[in-house]
Image 1 (cartoon, helix red, strand yellow):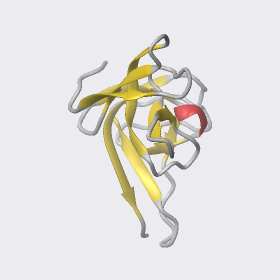
Image 2 (tube, rainbow, N blue to C red):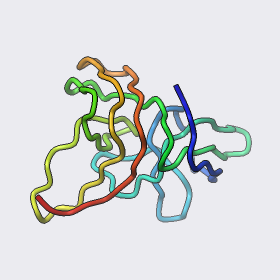
Image 3 (tube, rainbow, N blue to C red):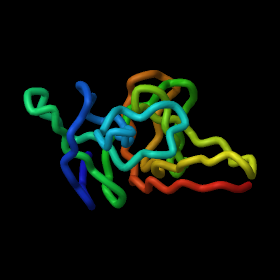
Length: 129
């Protein structure tokens, strides 16, 4: 499943996986999101390895994202970034640490690495309880 709201093309520093979250690197190139990233701007939907560019679906898009498998994801769960641009259920904010809700799960996925789950992308950082 993939519907798009905002889409854009970014230069990338290295190969990326379609279905991985995209974060911005310091050099303004896209890369697969790191664990607990607060700079996620969307998800990779296509990439050109020869040109080192990628198409990114931004907020408002519905895309299939890859679960890290560390826990089950339920319909309606808020999700956050994990290593390699994967996702897992977001833990509550502690009132001081910046977090980012990258989206809301539109289906469920078992606790198994590599499964995909359709997600409404939000890419909304927050701090608070």
